[in-house]
Length: 114
Length: 109
Image 1 (cartoon, one colour):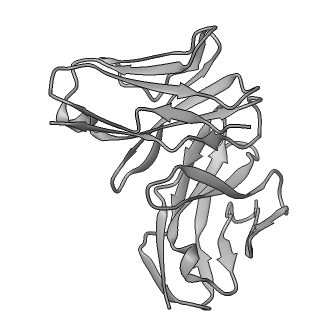
Image 2: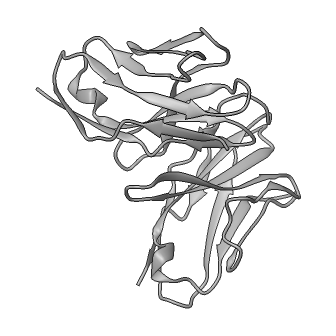
């Protein structure tokens, strides 16, 4: 059973460009979570999605960031008009249920904004 | 609100030393508690968990006990190895996992 797959692993963008990060959850998992990791700040929750629904986006910046998890295909975290402060590692996690179980993490996508 | 506080690192130990990483939480009710570990360049892996008060989670020689009286979930290991060098995250579960800032452990031989 393949784990959570994220791509690209590394992405370089210039200021003002768009970044798209993809996440395929583990087989059988219908819940996806995105986190951002900045040095010295740990992991910050961004958004929680189920298929075709955003359940909790309380950690998403109000502007330039969006996420989706379509009926078919991977979940996408989209960052428009990137700025240097968006440089970070973005981790995706999935779970089969949404209550007290563990989350399974991908290896992350590292975004560098020049 | 819900939050997790971990002791600040880095923690530097010699091989076979005893390890404690403190973790306390603030939450309504009694959430499930977790310790995750992150090795360099990798994602997070579940180390252990406890779902109710007084539960003890254990794995790979690591242990942590869910203490509701002190709202704590301290991580311990009796004898660390060089291969335990990593970043350790304490977390509680609400809609998603809420993490502490992480504690870097460095073990030397």
